[in-house]
Length: 356
Ligand SMILES: Nc1ncnc2c1ncn2[C@@H]1O[C@H](COP(=O)(O)OP(=O)(O)O)[C@@H](O)[C@H]1O
Ligand SMILES: [Mg+2]
Image (tube, rainbow, N blue to C red; front, side):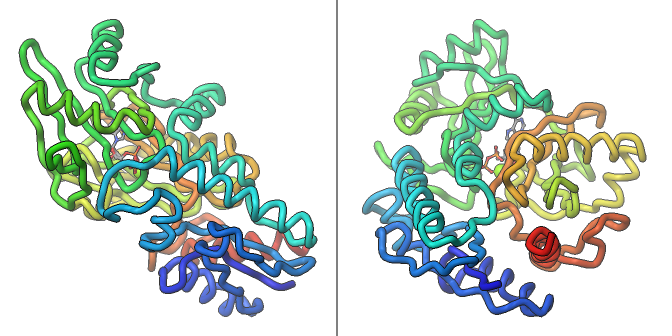
């Protein structure tokens, strides 16, 4: 068996995957740069080669090919990103079919996971608990109308194709008041990602913010009040490999977004398990397994699981196609990945699938 990984040179993900392959005694995977796939360069795939698709990471060159030229720190361009990303994945799939190589995973499922509207609809129809969506929001006035119609005072507004909380807005309203919490920074009519979560509290600013995000497509859903741990809200990232929830981290935060780069911190999983109780913990993992089952062609997904205040309700806020970058985290005791990191667990599942 020969192995290849589509990724970005210098990114940690392909390096961690390669290390896991070496430890398992598998051949060193060849790195196919995302920029080659995006440019339509010949990929030289071999018959029987197994190709893993990883995240393009934060490579400015790949970003320019995906979103077009511009400041890498800007928010937006998601619609173009998704078109270019899917076109590249389709080229990869045709090249694989033509040469007899095999892509690990399903590119259409990756495409759905990178569209929060489609992903939400798929989870909903699969019976997975999700926060209620507010449909057809194409700007601020539509947003406020939908909120009025559905009696919602607190919602999350998310760019349909976003990740890493880029452009995500936690919005709350009260008569005569509005407050938008976001990591996006408005500079005139341009938006930038920042590492600081701030709030906009005038109607003009919030309307402008939503107006800048809307052209790339929005997914809006009810804000589920999150459970707290030591005075911070938390949720869970659960990695599901081959249908089995194998790894979990608690992400805690003082802001409504728990993404780790925004000041979120890993929390104490033991404390969360004790607070949920054996039955609650089992239900939490079951929701994640059911979310992953909505993407049966994907050997690994990273589920963002919201735990409601009161620890009784769970809801999936996102399923990530590339949600496995959790270096040093070993598998849940009792799972088949006990003692293995997320990459070793995937390599093990991959080797099993390739020999059966
Ligand atoms: N409906 C919601 N209710 C409460 N918190 C949410 C909701 N949706 C998202 N969040 C919070 O915002 C963060 C970012 O949202 P997410 O959908 O995961 O987008 P991204 O792709 O940017 O990570 C989540 O990690 C979660 O903490
Ligand atoms: Mg997320």
